[in-house]
Image 1 (cartoon, each protein chain N blue to C red):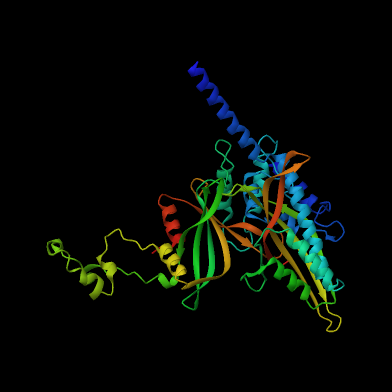
Image 2 (cartoon, helix red, strand yellow):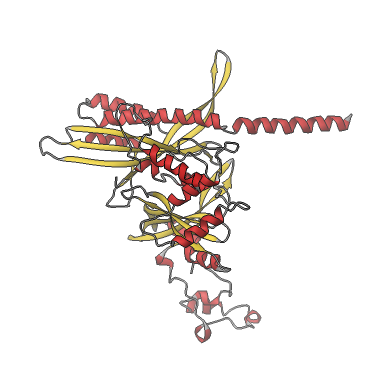
Length: 280
Length: 192
């Protein structure tokens, strides 16, 4: 603990004496420490979380074999500044439990860029049949060819929300169990007479909104306008979920920070994922 | 004899994969060299932006500098710009972005850079090239004498870099080197 304090005392002190090593030596402005403190990229969030860079400005990358690589005291200091401490209502106790869990001497846990268990949620604007609409895209990293790529895993698009409302109970129409004896001539009921042909699908039927979305895009009915917001969801730490969002505001607690933290009980992960994916 | 031949072939093939893998990997020392090269390119871009944005620069000279600046970028690169008041990103082709910069109606334009930057790890993409992001902070100040208007902003620029191993012939010898090109740039106005 004392070592952590020493490291961070040096960090804070050094912020004001960081030498000018910026882009243009002539026309550079000295950072007052705010940009140095900011978690400027998600890459830096990973490095800070794992204890893989120098605490002053992140200019030194620590690799396996370096003395401070994955150093627990370094990580403890970093974890304190990786939370949104201004707007999010994550209790001190929950943060402490999380930190203790992550920095456990017997089973320390790290984030891994290439491993499953994290993904991105992107809010984007489109026009759909001439009207402006927001969509939520879920993207994840996957291996491809010689490296990796981000791919679209799911989409939630309000105009598709009530497109498929399968009736239940007495309201649900059906093909009677001897339809086959008539060569399914009653399919007319599903495809011609019914306004809800999904009533005739199996109990495991789930509309694939991404396919539908791409189809409408190919038909030129959906056109991309812009991206509005990006955040990340992490399930890589055993028993925990956290969300990382970007905070662009004055002060030192800025950049990519933990905006939500949940200790997971059995079944919670599925509930949260269902909520994030919003496929109903 | 046949078994020995198979063993030899097996060992040969295994070692050639290792050599290939080693040559495609980027060591920490190599990464540092690539970072320096990438920063040089970003530094060049910064200088070009300052020249293009300055009213003192002649039209023909600005066009020449725009050509040089464009050469730093991979084909099709875009600038995505957003402001404090709107999260919506406006997209411009690099050339168009420079032209807009040149057309700004300020008598005096001062572009400076903060002494802090961040260089990400390099990740390999499906085609084998490596990609990284350099983050820098820029301060823009424009003054119009006639209207007395003075506009200031600080932007964060996240600049994509593509890193590729290339070959060239020098005096009959094949020399391998790592080349860096700039890609899409995300420009975000900060509250600083």
